Length: 390
Image (cartoon, rainbow, N blue to C red; front, side, top):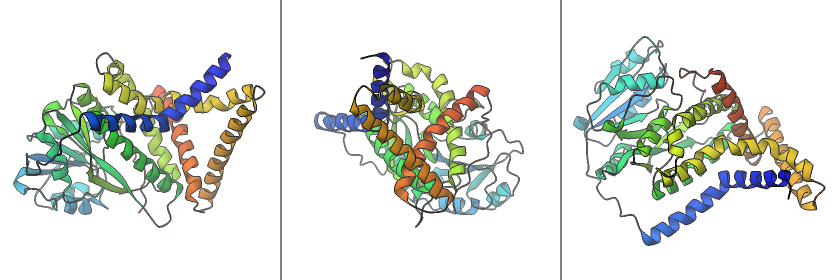
């Protein structure tokens, strides 16, 4: 076996493990854990600590009232719930609209410093043990806070993440279909990660933590929710996933808007991996390191790299065996389906099965664009958010 064959099969294994194999292995490990160490049921729904519910909002005048009404309808004691909207930089009337509502605290500065800077500033006004952040463009069920805070009765829990759900339309675009399927699979993995030990990266749409564990983020932080949750996990606390506390939002308006979002996430991923290099030490965080590398690092590094070089390697090996011809044909067919998905998306023809390979291609293409943006230092923490479908 020559070097090209070794690289080829290493690439096949890495891609398979990153997207499918880790899920299979994780499922098996959790099944075994349930047999020998079953988790006790969580029954303390009467646990009611004081909570600060914070919504960073930048120019959200069109939806801010829906979000406020949603926040004021939570099934949680009002005397134990502080609702805070932080509207730094908003100039479309968002702070004025929010200030009309009783029971809502509005923190506003004319300067826009980005979400991480806004979160750092808002934390100076927090005097409750539990903090929950939620995006302005999401709607939550009435019991969301109760489903989150019940986990904090366990002192080993340092943070709790809710579930992100994509609202479906009758005829989804490629971005809607792809994002919806992606988040369903992510939710499956997060449930297993949480049961094994901890999730590796919270959903910023609905994320909570103990105030005492928060430390100010660097103001250029791109993935604030990911960094906060991973730093808490690296301190030895569990970050729990609670699917009953879910945040609903629409998918990106188009693939172009979704690509904008994915590039930002990819640039943030590279920034985060540099700042979280200590989590890669298995001698200090064995299970966390295993989960972090398997679920995140491989998807952000080696898997996209091998996807890029696998076809050239396959051509170099095509004469060695008919088996390599079959694999090459499979690769070419997959990318042909991605190309067809792109064509049909532009023609407004909806065939969901073709949108999956197209979305997969866009995800990995964004990794390279995000890496280049990170290396050039051009991904600002202050960014124009992707437009969402109505």
